[in-house]
Every structure is written in C-alpha cells, then in structure tokens.
Length: 137
Image (cartoon, rainbow, N blue to C red; front, side, top):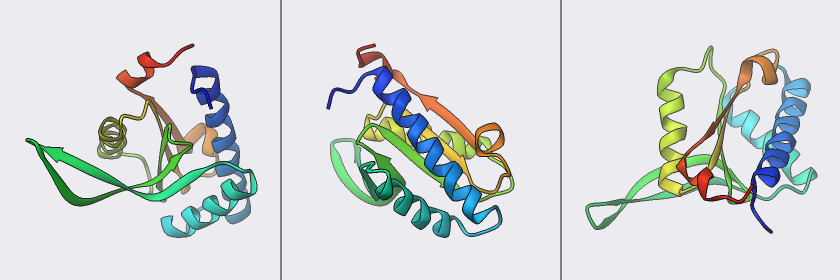
C-alpha cells in the first residue's frame, strides 16, 4: 500500500462515514467505550484495518518507558483516531492527539466527538503534522 495524500484523504472520508453511521444508529449520550466498540465493528464491516488501544512506547532520554499510554484507534498505520463523548472538544484534547501523532510518527489524526448531532459539522477535527510533508502528493 502506497501512502500518499490522496490515500489519506480517501481514508479520512471512509472513517468519517463510519463515524457518521455509528452516530446515526446510536445517537449522542452514550459512553465513549460504547462508540468505540461500535465503530470497531463498523470499520470491520468496511474492511478498514485498525488496531485498538494502540500502545505508545515512549522514549525519554535514551530510555524506553512503559507509560501505558494508549491511543483509541490507529487506522491503516497512518491515521490516529481519538474518540470522545463529551460536551465539547477542549484545547487539551487537541494537544493530546497532536502529541500521540508525534510520538507514533503518524501524519494525520482525527478527533471525533460522538456527543454531537452532526459529526461533520460539530464533532470532527482533523489534524496533520510535520510527517505529512514526507508523504508524496
């Protein structure tokens, strides 16, 4: 699989569609863990590869530390997906996903808040970082 900007954009579109489907079926107001399980099933149905509760190994001053830091989902090894079911996305949530992306060296991230009536307009934020510049157009 060749990762390029078009591949990432298409994958983001598919992930967004899967999130919309889960939100449409369940509606807002449930626990994040419920949305995660349903989204994992939806991604399986759409043949999108992912790892759940992906462990982030942290290297600090030449030592690999077991911090038990986990990201909700890593999609196709190229998009970090962090799920929330909260009143609103705060700057700390944005900082969290950007840090996860940096630590994993993954170019794109999506922050999805299932506690919204419209995922596209109110419940999704997309992020890119410096690793995006290393990808072919």
